[in-house]
Amino acid sequence: MRALSTPPTDPAVLRQAFGCFPSGVTALCALDADGPVGMAASTFTPVSLRPPLVSVCVQDTSSTWPRLRMRSRLGVSVLAEEQDRICRSLAGKGVDRFADVGWEASEGGGVYIHGAGLWLDCSVHAEFPGGDHTIVLLEIHALRAEPDREPLVFHGSRFRRLAV
Picture 1 (spheres, helix red, strand yellow):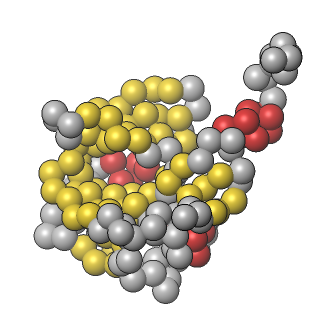
Picture 2 (cartoon, one colour):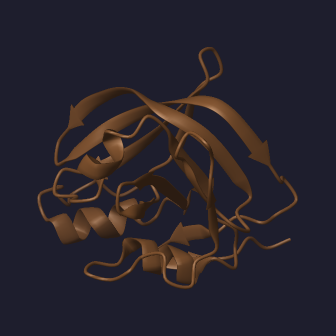
């Protein structure tokens, strides 16, 4: 192996390097006084079985996370392979992120995206600083899974599908 010579100081180089790791794509959504609010996150990771925890990382510059973090319940939807348009919509700025997006809300206020492969009813368990992001642990209170639904995968700065 050649020596590792590129220092991790250039954000563009780091973004390209991080893009070598494929990830699923989630939607974090809830109802507030103005209706549904949500965002896309590809930094979703299962953390613990007892207690049931998952994590997401949220940019500190996010204007959406402050609105979500105060909700008693958050809906986490793991998007399915045909939902790349929905992901782009939820990542948009200055637009109605829920235009043409099928969703429903739970009694607790979590918002869930129709057609996803996994839905988690969560609350914020803890938050930790992580550089230019906040690492958020979410406690799972209920879930519904459709394991035969193929996931949306983000790799190399684009959406991909799993091959059989």
